[in-house]
Length: 226
DNA sequence: CACATTTGACCCGT
DNA sequence: ACGGGTCAAATGTG
Image (cartoon, rainbow, N blue to C red):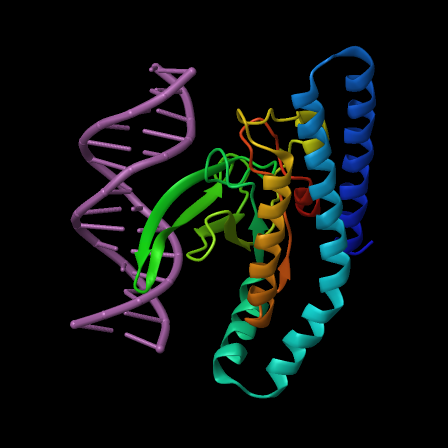
């Protein structure tokens, strides 16, 4: 199964799970706020799935195309990708809660750098079990300058440790902030997707969305790294 | 106490 | 020399 297929299936599974919760929520509680939260999560998950399906092929062709037109920068980037098995992802958060990305793996921060021409610093992370389990996985996270709800995440090496925590078991539904309407969240996601279209033209390998609300466990996309 | 994070110093390739 | 990445001592957290 390809990575993209895994992502789509995971997204759909999570959509089903959330819909079940919504049903039981409607049956057993009178809380409209938590139902709204569930609905907005369901909407976003389906947007993510559509997004992956619509961008996947295009990204591959765009990447190969620019590779052939010997733009030196792109070529250099491609070489780097081949050498270190790097994968760059762009994640969309909800803009609320903490500004990190929980992908189901445990990470330990070991450095941070400010960059010329960039407002936000880049964070450097290694797998917590680097020494105990010889897991060489690394990742870098940089917040987008243009949209604070977007994080560019670069993964270097895959996890060899088995300390992955399935998002399905950790998942819980976030409550809405007081007075925040569901429409606002949906709109915010759409705006972020526009920015992702721009990233796509800059040869980002693939784009994904995730929920980074503090009550939500690992993102469903992280099953890829199992 | 046993971890994690912060942050300036350090290293290394260009 | 400079920029990107990592180290490690100090500090924070449960």
